[in-house]
Amino acid sequence: MEIKDVKRNEEVQRLGRFSVEEYNRRMGGGGEVKFTAVVAADRQVVSGTKYYLRILGIQNGERKIFDSVVIVKPWIGSKRLLDFSPSTVFSTPFSYF
Image 1 (spheres, rainbow, N blue to C red):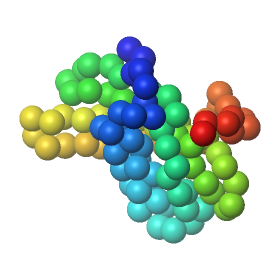
Image 2: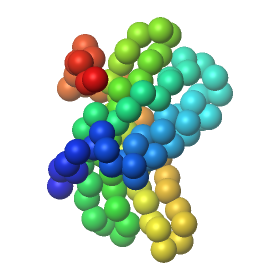
Image 3: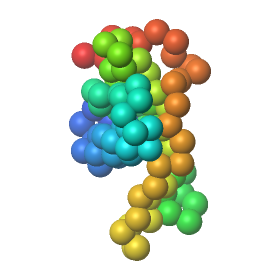
Image 4: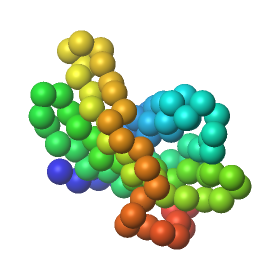
């Protein structure tokens, strides 16, 4: 299900920032990504809520779009990054701002 107005959705923006921070932690500093904003998002309710995020970030001085999947289980205080990779949908970042 598409999430509307992601630019103003604080929860979605926090999950985007979490995705980038977790990716950078896992990579150990190689090719670090700087979070800019979540530009699109969907969610699916499973055993928790799975978020599919499209994130605008900066890597090696270039603006890039990344796809991220995060699962959140609030009843146990858990959020986990399942996937983070360069987007195959957007090869060139679009104007978001």
